[in-house]
Amino acid sequence: MDLIQEIFQAIVLGLVQGITEFLPISGTAHLLVVTKAFGWTDLVGQNGLLMPSNLAASLLFCSC
Figure 1: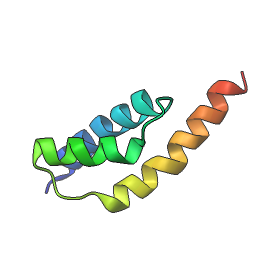
Figure 2: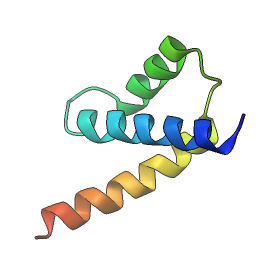
Figure 3: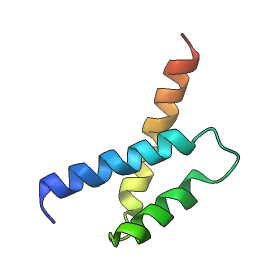
């Protein structure tokens, strides 16, 4: 997979994670549904990177 594809996937998954973060449903489930819907490989490592970055963004947003 080339770099542009990986960046695109990271952006899409980041948007999905950010949009669904405050819903009372697992954000990880949304990421799995999106990866399956687009036929992407399981991005467990990328998912692990999205969680801390999403937490940091949420803390930054809520602290303002």
